Length: 317
Image 1: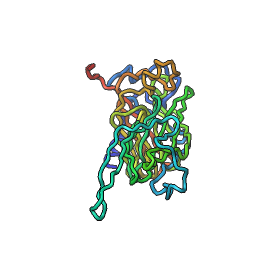
Image 2 (image 1 turned 30 degrees about the vertical axis):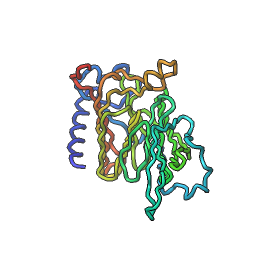
Image 3 (image 1 turned 90 degrees about the vertical axis):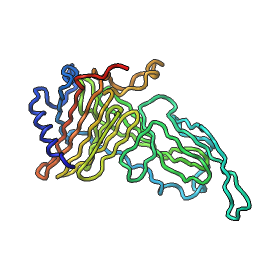
Image 4 (image 1 turned 60 degrees about the vertical axis):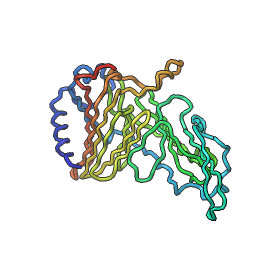
């Protein structure tokens, strides 16, 4: 990754020049970013302290049942609990026969799969070799000639003890029946590693080869790595996995409208319990940069997190 060493040196210089640059603490009552707009705050995180775990790999099209006889035929328009499948339009198309003597009417339905209630969620089709996925709903075409394809539905809840729970459900879209079936589910725990004042805003989990970060919805996010490929999922939250290894570096830069991981306003107005924290800077746009570097001589990677609020806010619409 070009320029990684330069950026790291600049970040390190800024880190040591700030009096409040230290590992984030949940005991802090004020947020230096809010107190000093336009001034960056840099935090170093002990990589070895990050909670260990892994996100299970998604299904692939090759994993689909070979024939309908291997599974029970689903009901038309069926969907897993918590998701709503709705047909938005339908059309008939004439398909000529090989002999050209007859024409068959092919029924096609355009459908949309959405969460049944407002939530922090991402819903997408895990395409092989893709490195970025996004969406909170998923549209598709149903028809007899369409194959089964995998889908992934992720929902996030944030606990008051500084942990976040990511529930991951793998689904099959059976286009021939215009239905969606649940295949498996897993729950992954992330731990807060950075705070705004007393509230956590960045969560992480690591395995031997990567660190996965969770933060609020990003308007724009860019990730890169010297070795391996970062993976980004964007929906009601942002999930980015950065590769980690000796003599390598990876980084991400994100623009967040807010640090808050909040359910939509209509959910709170309905009297439901808010499941996410609301940092003091929640109403301000935030620029975030994360740098992960490890040299051959280091036993552990260096993780730096930079956060700032623009000194000049855009005018209200």
